[in-house]
Amino acid sequence: MDTVARLREVENLIARAEADCDRPASSVTLVAVSKLFGPEAIRPVLEAGHRCFGENYVQEAAAKWPGLRADHPDVTLHMIGPLQSNKARDAVALFDVIETLDRESLAKELAREIARQGRSPRLLVQVNTGDEPQKGGVSPRDADGFIRQCRERHGLDVAGLMCIPPADQPPSPHFALLARIAQRHSLPILSMGMSADFAAAIQLGATHVRVGSAIFGARG
Ligand SMILES: *Cc1c(COP(=O)(O)O)cnc(C)c1O
Image (cartoon, rainbow, N blue to C red; front, side, top):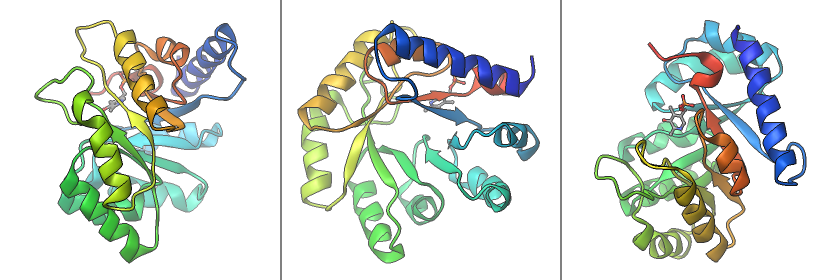
C-alpha cells in the first residue's frame, strides 16, 4: 500500500470508530504525523487533500514546511514534540497548534512571543498521565494548578489537553484520566491516540488523533 492508500485506510477506521460510539462523522481531526519524513513523502498526502500535520522538532519543521505551505497555504501545523523555551519564538511563528505546553518557563515565553508576534497558536497542555520521568508533560496531580496558572498568570488561552500514555500499559485509563481533567476545566480539545490506539482514544473522547507510522510507514 502507498501512503495515500494508508491515509484513506486510517480515515475509514476513524469514521468507523466515530460511528461505533455515536459520535458525529468528522468530529475527530486526523493529525498526520510527518516527523522524519521529507517533502517527497508529504506531498502526496497534501495532494490527496489532507491538510493537518504534526511535527516533533522545530528545526525540522522550519526547514520543511515553508516550501510545502507555499503550495498549500491552508495547512494546519501542530507541534507535538518537547519544546525548549528558547524555541518558543520559532514555534509561535510556525505552528497553528502547540500541544506540548508543560511548564511555567515555557508558558512565560509563549505569552511573550504571542504578544510580540501578534500570532496566537492554539495551546494544549501536555499531561504526563503515567508520571514517566523521561517524558514531557505536567504530572496529573499538578495539571489543575498549571492550567489555572497558564490562564490567570500568563493570560494564555488554553484550549485543551494532550497525552502520550506509557508504551507498556493499556492506554484507555490514561485517555479517561485526560478526559476527566479536561472536563473539570471545560477544555474542548483532547489530543490523544496514535497509530496503535486511536480507535480506543476516540471511544474516550479524543477530538484529535496523532497518527504517524500507520500513514507514512516506519520511521527510519
Ligand atoms: C511520533 C508521535 C506520534 C505518532 O506516532 P505513531 O505511533 O507513528 O502513530 C504521535 N504523537 C507524538 C507525540 C509523537 O511523538
